[in-house]
Length: 292
Image 1 (cartoon, rainbow, N blue to C red):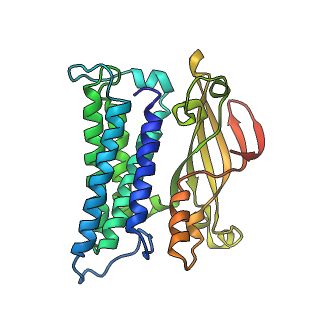
Image 2 (cartoon, rainbow, N blue to C red):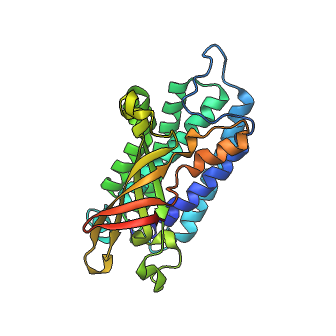
Image 3 (cartoon, helix red, strand yellow):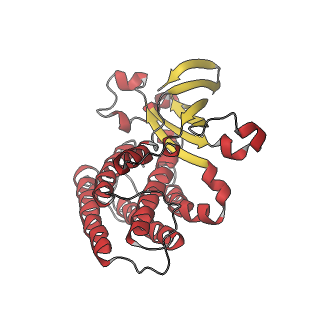
């Protein structure tokens, strides 16, 4: 995919958040909660989810068709190399990230409607796969893009992650986050939107050491502090290079209160890596008091 793909991810992400917030009132959005299997799913809640889904997918298609798919059409074709060259592969995290986000949001919505934890995860996985597969096929008819097997592999992986996490609880020790900080070329006017610039995009894997360390050591680590491994690309106009970071990370979902709205905000704000002390470890060492 080309460098406009992150904006697609970001806009649909915002639509999803707004839609989900309407259906979440008064509900604890903890996806691990297991509903009483003796209770049938609520018809009214399923209707609400369906209605919001129609709005979400309609707006999603409209935005993509108007902004990214209105260019020159072509016969269906595949994109084998272009996306790896333009971004050094850094866009793959975005495909995984958004697919996982969509699957988890729908898992929570179906859990709220009365489905069991496992049923909800499978339903969320299915809807995420459906949306991402349709998007990738539609890209295949765009002359500028084309169907990308590598993109769709990460779409599938992200969609399946909540289900895999159910069967392999160890995966629950890892969160996936994104952050943005303007690059030199963005400041020089290379892009209209920062989320279009891969050099301004940072991808993070947040590790919950408090749960992974022996109990004698985990007691000294606060619940809300994780360790994150970050990735970024620079100098894409000159062949590109990878950069790797280590950082503290704030686990907002571990801070639960009595107000559903605050819990909801914390849950979705937790998908963003907030500024924290960090060090770049590759290709050179640079210390940051706060890495944005």
